[in-house]
Length: 478
Image (cartoon, rainbow, N blue to C red; front, side, top):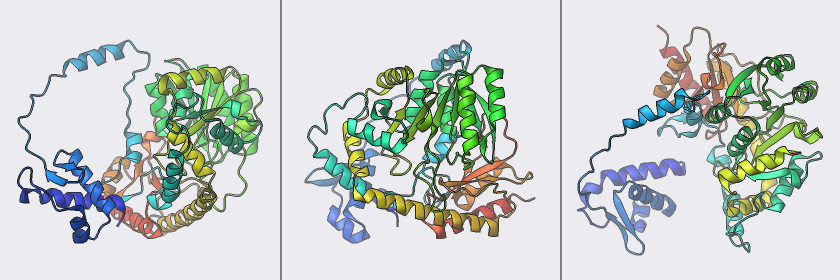
């Protein structure tokens, strides 16, 4: 059983058994719980910590865990209705309302209920994460001299240099800022490059987290359609002329959600069109290390061959390592770098030094190369398993592209299938999937779903998840 499931299950059992103990009464020792339930001491510790966080038990170092005393009275709820008037009054004066629908982001972040197969996730399954290497890196980082001191504002020089080498081309450490993950970097870039109320061009479909950031920043996302080779340059040029936008956000490599890779000709065209429009391209290179074994040589990032400073590059260690290793980088050239730095400092001060030190330890260890090779092999196997299962059980779901990188498949639903109804039916059948609607900033051309093959335990669970989705789809038939 996976650790997270074991903790939740043990916490539930202990919660049901609390009535056996009087308030203040002592629970069995951790050793006794380990022997009784045949779980690890870590599982017991985490289960007790969960109950303590809920106020049901009190833990005392060296003494054990005790049932918490009953709470004395519940304070009367306050009256927050005044906020509706205030928030509505603010939105009436804004060019773009700041209220944001975060459902498209939350669906990939929230863990589904126990027993539900997680085909909606955006991160690697824990079995694919380098947990032992991360633990060792963090331990080594904590022993470094000054590890808990204040880091340089732009990030540790050694880490900036590593990111510069990873990006390649003519990018140097002086062009790099260390950020708190890719999402933070995108937020900083959009705040720095466009004022509230301005249009920002985005691929359609595109990553819901970026759309949420744009709207929260007060920007107006304008869709530019993509095809099998990514964004269409002629439509990008038209959109720049029609809107006067000064920013275009792109994912040239293994685009989310379509998996498209921008070919060489279009890559040059995109940068040229943006340069002629006096605009920036924010290059979200989130999937650089998520290539599959059959991906072949990957094209260099747009920023690697950009002497004029058109491209602001974003990348992160989060997707390839762990959702909690929130360490990323911004790379840019020219005066814009100072503005990016100022926005980043105001919003974050700096990325915690222990995380930066741990990131350096991780990418500098022999385990890092082994991890990258293992992930490439596993993603290939899981993608193959999911495409085979879909062909067998759901052939009516159109799969325009089998990607050679990334962690998911993008499927077009039959015209007769209601996207929202399918999501609800799938959850009832025991599989969580991501809806397609949040990936569009305008009306979608059809119903879609995104299925992750990286957030599940393996090929067997993938096959079972697709079978459950078949059951859900059948249940929608009249």
